[in-house]
Image (cartoon, rainbow, N blue to C red; front, side, top):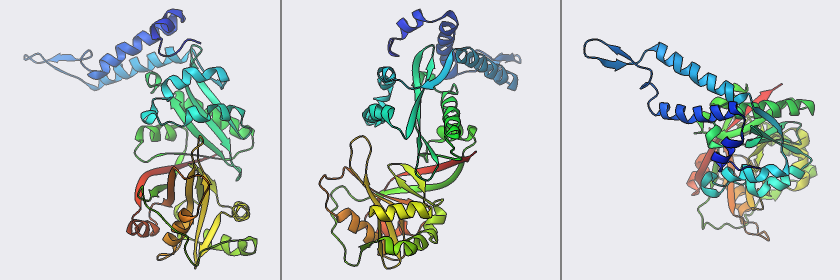
Length: 353
């Protein structure tokens, strides 16, 4: 398949309508450096140039016309192994070369609990996204990636709507996704798909060389403690602030009684006093993460739980250590006092069908 980087060869091999559209894209970008330069009217004896609302309207119509031409030859379809080279040609440079997609692509295509879709223009993959079906019955949308030259054309929305339809066909009624707090352009696209902001979370991490040890008085909750675990979790302030979810590898799952039971049987629920933590060893793309996925309690007990989990020995050293806390939680102050720093912040979005 012709690569995205070989733009001249691509244009030469495309139908005339797409060739015109791509040429128009470059012209429009030049205009957008100062879009009113070519749409101004002279006013007064001085001959100075000003723009009006009509000029803005004409420019918007011009952009919509261009989008319409380009979208005529666009479609969303299930991903194929042969899409990898075209997609990775631009994905591999994301986040300074640290995007995890290249490491999980092959695994995702074989997964039975998720599906990957691509957006293509004139037969060339220029975007992708994935839907994953979680244990609480919800569907998780992730990994939306669009080639820089094709952003702003509605491709991410097309992908998202296709994923929602696929999820509905599988019986999902709740759809969720996350985005960084500062990614406002993504938030606008998410709103167009009728997703609503549910809550905000901050991820805290210890200093790079910080070392911890097992703490006295911390125990792993067992099946006999299930009723107490459910009560402590679901009655907590953090449960309400955080929309009743826990996080694992940047995926949010509802803490229903059945999910809490599963976590207890996994040995992932810890307690001391009246405080509770859900902690899981996980990761993406072969990385090892130590994650405190839910944390609630008072005083220094929550930090004690974090230190205990991070201090437990594992065969492989964790490359990332993180603690998820909903914004507004008093636990944040305790973490800061203990030397933890905020790594990033995320917004949880949800849509019901």
